Image (cartoon, rainbow, N blue to C red; front, side, top):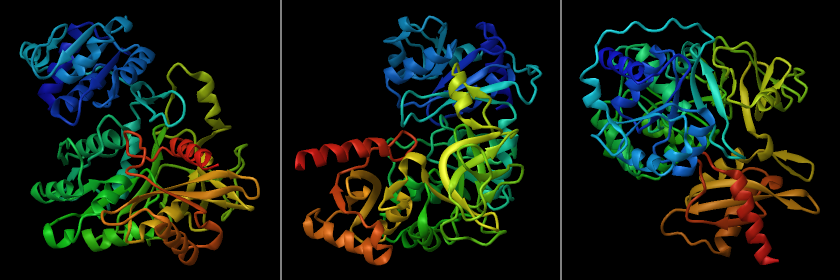
Length: 487
């Protein structure tokens, strides 16, 4: 990897890449993805990870917004770029990893003529290194610009969430694409920092069975499994009897897991899944670690070493323990983004004084454990209650008929909002009125009467971002449409 990344760094320089230039990496999990990142950082350039399944419109926006000069991709990516190349005046060179294509340079042929010696550009902690675009659940994506300090800043959270990673024999894998901060900075780069091997694989279609098979076949010891992946794996019957696993740690983040998934994880993996928390702009700041601290049901953990995470109001004033407010991170912090690329006002709006407001709400107890309640715009206000969707979703998942569930609020004249559940059923169950009443009663009796879904809708699949997060805004729009047709 040192030789390949040095060759790549020399090749980038030969094609005019200079300090601060943006280098797009439009590839799935692959060796070329990894050494292209390292080469960009050695050159003092700014890497732009791009999801391989992006369409032309998504690529055009990100490449144009960032002013990307060079893109490393494959034949599929090159075909998408060919249709938008004339709209990207700053894009000068496209390398393809699987042979020459019209208008591109054959990467491996070009690498063969480059030296394996390269002296990295001297970079400081706050020099820019990577732009990662947000998932774009609301509005156009924003490019979060991170500095070189972002990698060492991630290490404590990664080490916590993987039970004091690394230990001898560790080998890590995630289905999360390296184009996202979870795949790149929670797995690939921290593992390499510690000299731990990374299993690289991209399923054409992720299934629970395939994930269990990979964990067994490749002797994976540590994995980051997003909640959606865990929920899909949960639908597989008797995995502990069908596969021989050797896992030492399983970490998950992105949405709160809830008691049901944690219990399933203990039964299936023989360990407690460690939840962690962060976002593109300020990642891996909170983590649990069942090896060294008690597990608090419903908690996402405590602030990882090196980070100050508190609950504040909208003005950035600290709130006492037990009071719900904004989950916020104090600056300076090594994983905190420098700015949104070309968006100074959006950057300013992210802060209240020296507190970065994550946009999520939570509660912190006296022992420092943080409970995630939900996104600011996901919290449901009903009859004076503020209701987070996660707890209800977890409760619905405990019903034998439910494969996946999401909960949103819908306007109501009497209660301000009512709780609405959108449910994907397991095979063999029917989404009829009887099932609706059964699920409503399930929540009402097992969780709380004021939290039961007054409306239930059944769908084949939930709308999700490319990172596997439920798009609640889209769900709310769907509910509005369904209710309008019923009126």
